[in-house]
Length: 460
Ligand SMILES: NC(=O)c1ccc[n+]([C@@H]2O[C@H](COP(=O)([O-])OP(=O)(O)OC[C@H]3O[C@@H](n4cnc5c(N)ncnc54)[C@H](O)[C@@H]3O)[C@@H](O)[C@H]2O)c1
Image 1 (cartoon, rainbow, N blue to C red):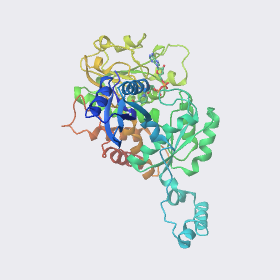
Image 2 (cartoon, rainbow, N blue to C red):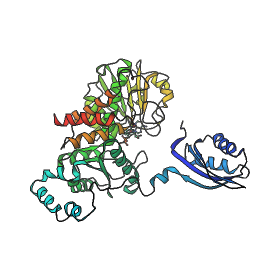
Image 3 (cartoon, helix red, strand yellow):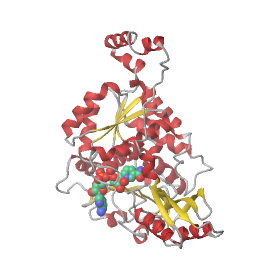
Image 4 (tube, helix red, strand yellow):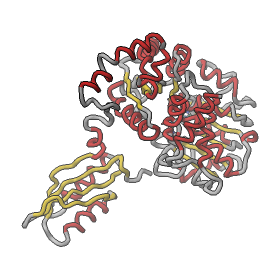
């Protein structure tokens, strides 16, 4: 059930009669249709009318229209303008470049640019590794997409992906001081994407692949890792895997189970699910059972691609077959990165005692978390309006901070596991409970702890 949130926040400018009851009438009208007022500002006052900006959260674009209609229906009230605050925030984009050096006079100019800069160019030509010391490469990451899997919205193309990539760059800067820049490629051809990233790589200390559809994303990442001497990290895969492994470690602490005794169902074997399975297997669970849209993944299934075949070979010890509901029977943990509304409380009841349910499909999870809570001991989602939000922002800023600080040339599973441990460890034993298995995304301790762990693992 959606609740009003800042994602659909509007400011409605209305003219209203200057009566004593005007404010009450306006706020009541918004409240009656379920809007949540966050600000009420009188911007003009006249003898015969007041002009008021009412800012409120809605549940959807339609709900925002209902709020406006409710205000218009009040006697003597006229709506002058409706501003969507999310669109306002995006006007002209969300990031910019700023110079780190002062350019006040000829002296500054001669060192920052010609003629002085020529000596820096020559130094790098003689010793290419100096680029990591004397240029932005030291702190810069490319956020690369082809726009083929934008959020849960599908193949929107490179231009429509840009607001997400800008947001990602803003998060990199805010949480870890990393200078990230969007690179939205106007191609969805695997070879062209690989070549394009290879060609731009000299500028960057790392490549963050983003919102590139499976299975193309697997090959692109693997080939770029072979070709480049900087770390390549597909956040939809490994950022998710890090956060899930961190959250699972703490969830199992809450229920007092050892992962070595747990059967884990992973529903969704796309970008996120495949990476989760690979990282989880390093933690030594009793078994992992993977399920996708065609049912349980097992060795005798036909028509599997390389990725599914690998999963089939390395999971499902007992050769289970069937659908998700069959997989859930007796399982200790469910991890969903698939599709909305796949099961209900009655299926959770068939899981082992003290079941853990991570229903991460966005925006609507595999099971309503309130339903899941009826039988599960710990429930997590990807949503900010429920406890235990599993959000990649816990991982990627610190991961790249650590990689850049270590001047790492690759990224390895021990680094991913170190990042997961660091996130889990932020939750102190006295804080840990079924509603708090991961730290807040605004916990300032997270990114430095992750960075430190990744840097140590990279230097080990
Ligand atoms: N931190 C998070 O909360 C987080 C992180 C990553 C992905 N996600 C969510 O996970 C979902 C999957 O993301 P992805 O990038 O891996 O997508 P993807 O398209 O690469 O993979 C989707 C997978 O789900 C499976 N699937 C689809 N419908 C299914 C059904 N009815 N039953 C069983 N399996 C089904 C598909 O077969 C496929 O294996 C999305 O909703 C995404 O928003 C959440």
